[in-house]
Amino acid sequence: MRRVMFLILALATLLPTMAQAYEILVLQSSRDAGYETVLKGFHSGANPSERIIVLSDYAELDIVRIVREDRPTVILAIGDAALATARKVHDTPVVAVMSLGIHTPASQQPNLTGIDMFAPPARYIDIFKSMKTRRVGVLYNPARCNWYLRLARRAAEAAGIELVTREVFVPRQTIAQLATLAGKVDALWMLPDSTAVTRETIEAYFDFGQQQNIPVISFAANYLGLGAAAVLEIDRLALGRQADSMVSAILRANHSGHMALGFPNNIQVKTNPGILRRLNIHL
Image (cartoon, rainbow, N blue to C red; front, side):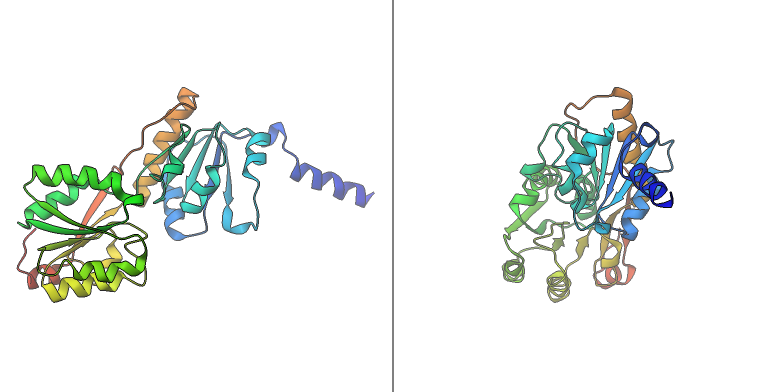
């Protein structure tokens, strides 16, 4: 009898039922603190029923089967691994956040939308303009950031600023390409480009800035301690709330058509006063 009861409980756990039905499937890449903050912001709204799957908890996951059986109305993908998994689904709307891969060609599928990990380029250009810089160096991988550079060039041209760009296709090219900017720029702009900016190349940006006596403007507050003069950092709690608004709009519309990507709504400007004083820059 006990064995029969055990089998019944196991089947109840494995098989989808009406009681387990939910509207939102949350795919979270890992139990990273940043992802948890986004999810906390997402939950600050009046969220409908949901199921959360943390991908790092599984060796394998058949997302297509899960979506086919559970039939969620929308998928929230948090992080690059979650987006890569969600791309396998083509009929259910997907909202992606905390992913640098959202603009790659593979992500241009009609059921996919989300929020960029980039601040609007005009916000950076405003900082360069207030610093009275005229030539700004940028390293980037065209496959990842070409779309962003197009927007940045338009904003820079309107402000009378020249972007001196260098393309990098593999991380090992970064240091050599930085060297070609010596004496040619009066500021350096670090993009959240996972080819141009890696653990192995981060210090090279700040060494270059110190050697050239120019400010380095970046995208995350932890770079201030390494030598960034200023950063534009995404408020991750607000990012979660913004994702909630997008998901709620999809639920209300109940559609899977094309939805426009968006920039983060809440961007925080943070500075390194010591670096700014040394460079005699006022923001």
